[in-house]
Image (cartoon, rainbow, N blue to C red; front, side, top):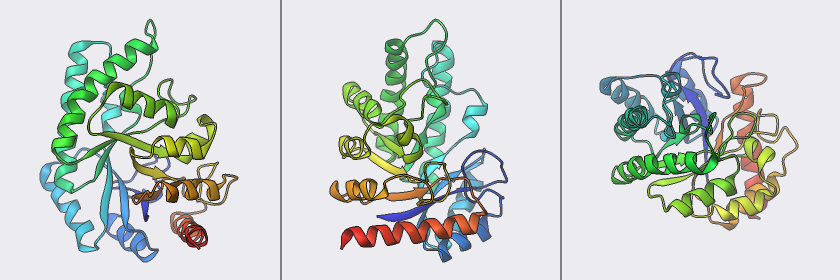
Length: 274
């Protein structure tokens, strides 16, 4: 398993991004010095040329872009489970354009979180799931052809009302027989929604594209009350060889948060491997 960390290409106050001051060149050097090998890249709207330049910055430091997160799509109102058919077609097109960007930048996966949409007024679970599946048949196939996985992220009930747990998300992917779609698991959300970390990880054995491993209070890994022995042992048992990624609030600061997390994860994995 490799160490990943959340980083933004621009200055932002949005969410649990560890490096988010927009000083990308320095952030890349800092994360590399702390032992991180890849990133979850939060990105604003960019041209193909700007995307290529960002890629060069990471390539120069031999840092892999694991997951591409086009969070600006949420600001544009994109919802892949949108009720209005014409708007949903537009949203599918916009998401596919970002798959193209993810391909240019060399990402392994593209995240799908809030922009999948939720169950709205005068809506129901079954219809919402059907609409999302219809969108994912299209974008999943397109992602698969471009050798990119769509990381569908289970998000807790207090933030979204649809696909909250890992097991629910795995069940949705399997029942709909979706191609090119995996699971982006996050221990913060799992702590709220999943009854048992081990059972959820085992259920997603062949689908996990990335795992975010912040603490229970969404800060540095190992500082909360989660049972990381159970979590990491389960990942070892399924032979997971992807990224353990720090997507967290940078307390007390980005460097300290990143350093504490890397040391904890490496130590824990070493002890579990014997």
